[in-house]
Length: 223
Image (cartoon, rainbow, N blue to C red):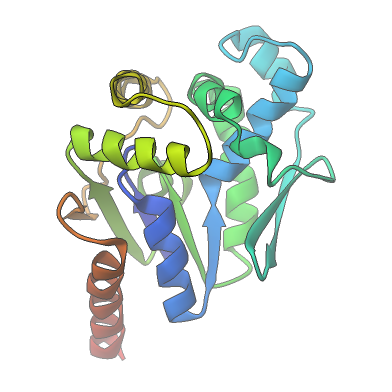
């Protein structure tokens, strides 16, 4: 069983996907973590993540793998555990630029497909249901008002000790939305057969219950 959860930054994709995976007893693959690991490779080499020629060269050198652990997904970049460092703000901010390059998206999509064929899995991202796994058994598209998404991200960063302002986070989120939606290959968009879910006024647990009920009901009907 493959479940695809797409949507813009701050819509709650990773949180919902992680909780839903636990509820269903299957693997959650955090694809955003894979892209952050990939851009870390460029940053560590002093490269500009926005440079296409550099991205094309580096993509061939990058290998990202994941492992499940009691603390969640561990992400490895060419054998090195980068689970903690890739969450730094500099990495998250650069990930949108680096992931816009076709060579990077094609490489990550290939790695994600390799993982998805082996186990029951939930993948969250921006192009899972449209590009990475268009034949996924279940597709959901999570969204929320951009002000709410920026508020969530601001709280998340402050809880991690970052001194950030809502206005700055909102501006960065607007820019990321534009980048993700306008890239040439696999832009952020809702798959035609995906179920749209607005998370603006709901908690992650409420959304998880809705998705789980739908999935279990559908499976019961089909069986």
